[in-house]
Length: 302
Image (cartoon, rainbow, N blue to C red; front, side, top):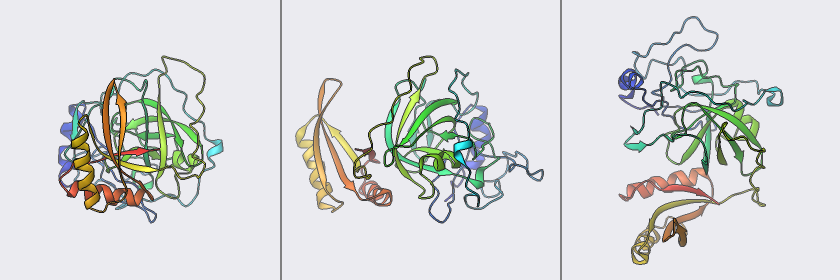
């Protein structure tokens, strides 16, 4: 799917050092992505050039995303070595709004640690510009994030098999609901997100200014199937939490839990739906929750 009207705003957004790169995950049979931050020439082709004035429907050579026929030998690809870099002039505007949702860019990748759903992108965007105006290379270990600064580095670990990779974050996205990071094709192959299209991951920011021993990957869930939950709200008032939980139960979305937790010294009740069977089911339930007039739920992976 595409973002109607976003392309027309791209040039102004980049002048303001704004965000780009809205997109959805590739599906099993390829995908279509919405990308206000990618424009330019396909790799190895002289017939395409960067042209930010083109409409969203005509900017890319391909109409939908796909992957190359040859799978790269990722064991021969070198992971990026984290190093201190100046912030990109483009793609770091904060806050910024895409599809009605506002995001804040973090000052650094330090202490960033989040679990969620990863997706990836491939052929359609290979050789085109990322939100930082670098050229996207699907055979490099890179990624897109809504909140990590451009550029920055992170270790991404597949919670279902324990495989991990260091990526250089140089793009904005994914803005598809419930996604925490969008990986390059090579990175997806490296940790087993390809060919499924999505996977459950942990993303840990790396601060080059704070060298430390390499962290071990997080423990893999013994069953190989981490639980996917949708957190719909968090309340200090137990009655408010129970009212929301009852409303969700009446909607027959799945098991609803009210879980107590201490956050910054304050007792809160988290209202969650799950565990859900898979990413597709999480997407369906999330859409139904938003259709009830409730805020977009947050994905939690335990």
